[in-house]
Amino acid sequence: MTDSDFTAMMHAAQAAIDYRRRIATAETTPAATYAEILPAFDAPVPEQGGDADAIIAELIERATPGIRASTGPRFYGWVIGSSHPTGVAADWLTAAWGQNAGNILAAPAASAVEAVAARWLLELLGLPGEASVGFVTGATVANFVCLAAARSEVLRRTGWDVEGDGMFGAPPITVLIGADAHATVFSGLKYLGLGAKRVTWVATDDAGRMLPSAFETALKAAPGPIIAIAQAGQINSGASDPFAAIAPMAREAGAWLHVDGAFGLWAQASPRYSHLTQGVELADSWATDGHKWPQTPYDSGFAIVRDAEAHRRAMAISASYLPPAEGAERDPSAYVPELSRRARGFAAWAMIRQLGREGIAEMVERCCRVATRIAERVAGEPGIALVMTPELNQVMFRFGDDDAATLATVQRVQDDAIAWIGGALWHGKWVMRVSVSSSATTEADADLTAEAIVSAWRAVRDAGEA
Ligand SMILES: Cc1ncc(COP(=O)(O)O)c(C=O)c1O
Image (tube, rainbow, N blue to C red; front, side, top):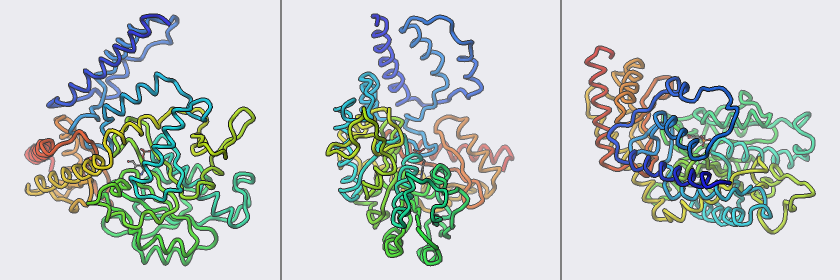
C-alpha cells in the first residue's frame, strides 16, 4: 500500500462530510437522471490501474451530480432513513476493518456486537427475548429468511424435512396474506418454492388492515400446514394489521404468523404509538429494517424468529473449517443466507447507542408529527384531497380527484426539487405518497414541504393539466 492509498481514504471522508453539510442546508436538491449520469462513467475497461487519490477524486466528481439527496431533510420517497452520521462513521470503520462477519473466529468483535445489538433490538421492539436475529440487507431478505424458518417448522411438524428433501412431494402449505401486503413478501414466497400466486388472499379494510373475520374464515378453510403473513406499517397508509385479534387465532390453528414490519414495527418503540401494533409480539417471526427508522446507512435489515432452532435449521451452513453452528456462541452466518458478509452489526449497534431508547421513541414520534402537520397544511387547499388521516408516518394526497393531475403534481414537486416525493397506486387510484422517515426532517421542513406541494398543485391546475 502507498501513501496515496491512505490519502484517498482521508479525502473520501472529507468529501463525504462536505457533501452531508451541504445537503443538510441546501434549499433545493436537484439530481441528474440515470441517463444523464451514465456517460460520466461509460468508458472501456481500464487497461492500467491508477493512483488511489486520483481515482477517488474522479469518482467524487463524476458521481456527485447524480446523488439523490435522500439523506437531506426533505426527502419523502419510498421509506428511507437518513443514514445518520454516527451510523455512517461506524460503517466506514466496518469497511476499513474489512471483517468477514460470518463466524466468531473470523470476526470476534463483529460477532459480539451483533449478539448485543440483537438483544437490544428485541428489547426495544418488545419482542420475546428468546428470539434469534439475523442481520441481513433489508426487509426483503428478512422476510425471506423468516419465511424459510416458517416453511421449515410447519413442515417439520408434519414429519417433513424440507432442508434435506426439498419441496418435491412435500405436504402443500397454505399461505394466507392480506390483500394490501408489500410486493417484496412475494419475492420470499418465490424463492422458497411457495409460489407468489399460490396464496389465499385475506380481505382488508380501507386502510389496508386484514379483517379479523376474513382471516378467521380463511384459517378455518385452510387445509394442512399454514403460514399467515401480516404486516406492521402498510407502505401507503402506514396501517398495521389487528395483531391482538389475529395472532391468537393463528396460534389456535397451529399456523405460523409472520409479520412484515419494515418500518411499522418501530411503532413498538414509542409509548405513544405502540397501541397500533398491540399484540404483534404474539407472532412467530418479524422482518424489519435498520435503514428506515433506526437511520443506519444502507444496507441493514433484521430477520427475527421466535424459534431460534427453526431459524438456524433454515439458514446455518456447516463445514469442517467453520466453527460448529450450534455452539454457545452466536455465529452471525447461522441466521442469514450468506456466509461471507459485511459486519452490519457495527452500524446497528452505533445507531442504537446514538439514539437510545428515548431518542428512537422521540424520532418515531417526530416523524409522525411532521406527517400530520404536512397533511393538515396541505389538505386545506381546494382541489387537494387527503386520502385518509395519517395514523403513523405515511400520508396520501389526490389532486383534482384525477390520476393525470396527481401524477403531474408529483412530477412538478420533483422538478422543483425543494422536496422529493413519489407517487403510488392505492386501491386503483394514483396518489402522492409522503413518507416521513428521516431523522433529518423537522417541523420547519414540514412547512416548506407543504408549501412546495400546494404551489406545485396550483401550477399544474393553472397550466390546465388538471
Ligand atoms: C412494508 C415493507 N416491507 C418490505 C419492504 C422492503 O424493504 P427493503 O427495501 O429494506 O428490502 C418495505 C420497503 O419500504 C416495506 O415498506
